[in-house]
Structures are given as C-alpha cells and as structure tokens.
Image 1 (cartoon, rainbow, N blue to C red):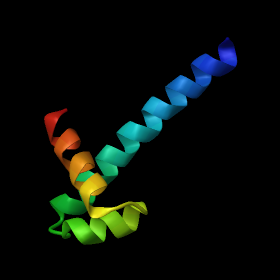
Image 2 (image 1 turned 90 degrees about the vertical axis):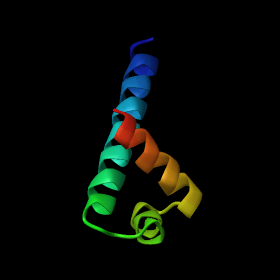
Image 3 (image 1 turned 180 degrees about the vertical axis):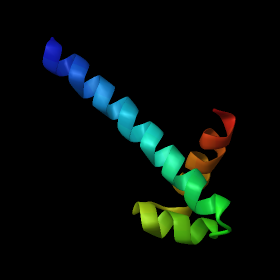
Length: 56
C-alpha cells in the first residue's frame, strides 16, 4: 500500500511540475509549439497544461 501511495504522490508532483514548467516557458513569450517540444508532448497537450497552470 505504501508503494501505491508513493506512486500516486509522485504522479501528482510530476503533473504539477509539468504545468509549472509549461507556464514558465510560455510566460517568457515562448510559443505553444516550442513549449510542446520542450516538454516532449503535442501542442494540444501543452495547451492543456498551460490552461491548467493558469487555473491554479
């Protein structure tokens, strides 16, 4: 059970770090395509991360 809990916490931390990274990259005027490339994801997923980061 402890390992499952730790995995869940790690997943949430990683998701939050991704959102914060996306927000930081885009805040500097970087286009969504460049943010997506930097995060190793698609443009649409990067936009979701950016929108989510702004809601926090």
